[in-house]
Length: 224
Image (cartoon, rainbow, N blue to C red; front, side):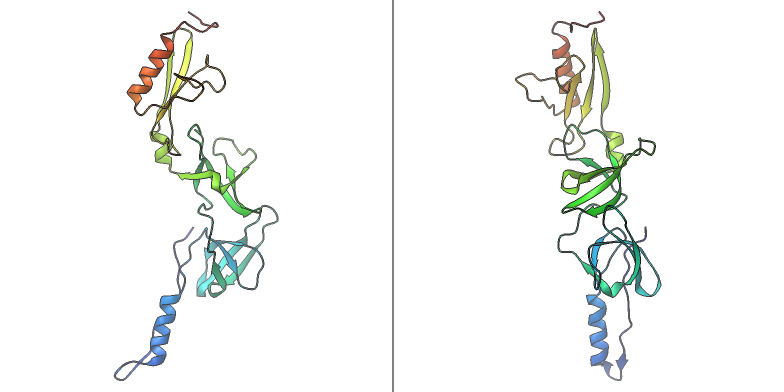
């Protein structure tokens, strides 16, 4: 929605080099903040937080109030924009996932709002226009479509066992694999010892875990 925008002004010079006025003008140019669409800022003379929507001519920005409901738009001068010391790191349009290694689905951020903490209004691209969900930004991680497309999602079966090998996309487990089977209790994760999910560092080791699992007696509802 538009790239970084900044105001520029040509410094004036007189005979013999740059005048004092020209030097001050040059310093002012260097001091101008560079903003981009999607940033959350404060606006001088206006309460609350505002999302930068798109730049306009003559250093004017269209902004939208960063709240969950009754959002309003306004046009303000770039000189009135004030960058936040701790602005939210997620913006409208980002593809995000909850920061849990078991998470498989991603959502598109439709808006960012302040509700005592920064939250993202998430739109599920597969929901067909279903209701949007709200999640705290500190629980989310930005991902790419390429990351999602390249993550392993492998269906496996043996006898009465039906399962999947799934590669984590986010968290410290990103790139690792877990194995699930419908016969396993709870969420179906296969565990070698105790209740902790067994994470595998390679696809081959995940296949070995599956082989270990199906090498045991078939589940009670086995089709074989």
